[in-house]
Image (cartoon, rainbow, N blue to C red; front, top):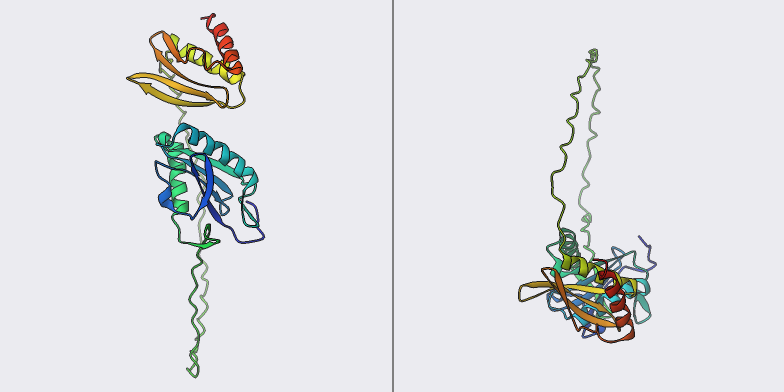
Length: 264
């Protein structure tokens, strides 16, 4: 945990259509419609919240911004908040059925659920409870303290019994696992090859699980290169658009993918 030469702050940033701006810390903004970044100097953490209804471009922008702000911080006036935060916690509300994501969301909400004061309208800091002090009343008689008698230690004779040998039962051998190996369809193998070809030829890849009329699939985006939808049914997959977007990088991914699936 870093040691600050000033008091710690919390700063909330709202990503609205690709533009990040500071707002007063408000737990109510952590909802399904918003993408929020919170720089938490109390816990040396950058929190990134993506509501389930946030559009994909805003979602990706917020993730990129959070990862950058974790390192560089965000400047309010002459003060840089959250510089080089020790960790980043990314929370996608649509994944809240995952136990780890659910725990992170609960920790995030508990962190925000405090009583805050503000500097510069947006820099939140914890209110310190003033400790009540008992002041003596002028002229009142002082209370006399009677010294307490010191307890007298009494000796007690303890008889040691000889240690009895312990019998340790042999540990049962673990039963062999009988869980069947998961089956993978041909369509899933092709989708896996597509992901391999994409990752091999890209620096950043974003994926999203989709469902089109009961047909499962995924959306794959390589920023500035391609955005495609892949649907898996039986032994085949359908890719839209078929030319992967037509850019040079997209065609390179398509060529790599075509070579891979020839081995199936």
